[in-house]
Every structure is written in C-alpha cells, then in structure tokens.
Amino acid sequence: MTTVTERDVLRDALGLLKDREQVAERLLESSAKHSFDPETELDWAAPIEEGKWFWPPELVSLYDTPLWRKMSEEQRMDLARHEAASLASLGIWFEIILMQLLVRHIYDKSVTSNHVRYALTEIADECRHSMMFAKMIQKGGAPSYPVPRLYHNLARVLKTVSTTPGSFAATLLGEEILDWMQRLTFPDERVQTLVRGVTRIHVVEEARHVRYAREELRRQMVTAPAWERELTRVSCGEAARVFSTCFVNPKVYENVGLDRREAVAQVKASGHRAEVMQNGAKRLTDFLDDIGVLQGVGRRLWKSSGLLA
Image (tube, rainbow, N blue to C red; front, side, top):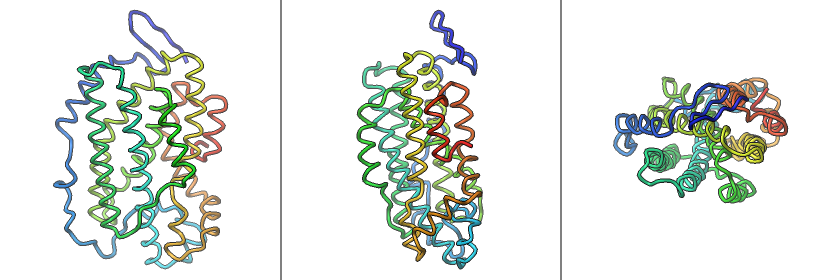
C-alpha cells in the first residue's frame, strides 16, 4: 500500500481520499432526501402472506444439503422464518455495538462539523433499524436469537478498547455481508411483502453508512501508526471469525424439529453455503485487501472464518 501525505492531501492504493467534510455533506444531503420512518412506511397491520418465504430459500443455511432435500416445503419455509429472526437479532446486536463505536469516534471531534453531524444522523438511522428488526421478529412469530453469552461479553471488550480503524473495519463486516443478502431479498416476489419492505429500507440507508465507514477506514489506514494498522488487521480477522460463527443461531434447527448437530455439520460441509458466504463478503474482502487490511495473521483469520476463499 502506497501512502503519500502532503498539505493534508492523502492517497492510498485506491487513489486520492476525498475531503472528510465534503463526503459528510453529500451523505447528509442524501439522508435528507432518502430516509424512512418504518413505523409509517411499512404496513405492520397486514396479515402474514400464506405460501411466501421470510427469507429467500437459496440464502437459508441448509439449502441444497441432504437434510434440506429430506425436509418438507413447510419445514423449509419455517426454517427460513426462524433464520430471518436469527439474522434480525444479530443485526440488532451489531447495530447497538456500532452506535456505541460511533459515539466514541465523535467524542473528541467538533460538534458542528459535517462529519459529526452525519455520524449522529447514522446513529438515528440505526436506532430506527433496530426497532424495525425487532418489530419484524415479533410479526413473524419466531423468537429472538441472542448471540452466545461468550461473544456478547467479548463485544463489551471491543466497545471499550477498539481503535478507530478497527471500529470502522468491524462496521463494514457487519453491514456489507447482510447488505448483499438483502439486495437479493427485497426484489424477490417469493418473499413476504413486509420482509421485502424492511430489507429495502435497510439497503437504501445502509448504502450511506457503508460509504461513510469506507472513507473513514481508508483515511485511518493511511494516517494511523503501524501498531494500530496491525492491530486492525488482527481484530478485523477475529471479528470475521466471530461474525461467521454467530451468523445463524443453531437453536433455529431445534426449533423446526431438526437434529442440531446434524444440521450444523451439514451447513459446515455445504459447498453452496460456503459460496453464498464468500460471495456475500467478496466486495468487502476485495476492498480490505486493496487498502492493506488483509495481511498476515488477519488474513489467516479471515480464511478460517470461511468468508475468504
């Protein structure tokens, strides 16, 4: 990675970095035009639609496994409903972490800057998203699926000790893979109208969040000291490993009448599932590779997560 710093002009392997305030100004303009209130935008009173999925079947973890082929269509659709609830629960957990990381990021910055104003705008977006996901879980009738207690408590450590580049690398990890899946979901007419509406809102608003995080991570990987860049590589790789582990709560299999161990084993052995997860992460891993995050131990952790081929 090439780094040049001259008169506050920064460059990395992807080219010149844009002015931080100008980026935030454009994102604020976009937020003013394209933000949604899920409470009024979505028809929460509409009944659940018979014969429609809560998640595209190709994105369900057991799709195209021997166990999937033995399952009835009803059981497959029920698993999709529970996995949608599991992913929404993961999303809420992650967004609560992200909001705290953003608050830490802006704590020492000028409160009148566009950069801080946009961070506060994003926090407001994430508040609405978390409430929207919780309401979707309730509407679908599946339980919420918290992450294992170990990872729940490890996140307490992350929120306390994470450096700025590490925070934005983790942000992109949580946003971009789910975003890829949701871009396949909201146009899919096989899927419940409510779920499509939820994913559409999330995709539109998350596009701005991704832009903000990418621009800031590029800046941090240019300006941060060497030790912090290396810590970011390792912490990002470990976050990828945890994220892939927590992606679908194994309890979903028990709740639809499947053997948990058999289901988990078949998901791990599934070539289709590996391809889905790596395709979902590819845009992110290509970007992280370009800016020098996927190196050394961090790269090996990403490979062990199954998100990097």
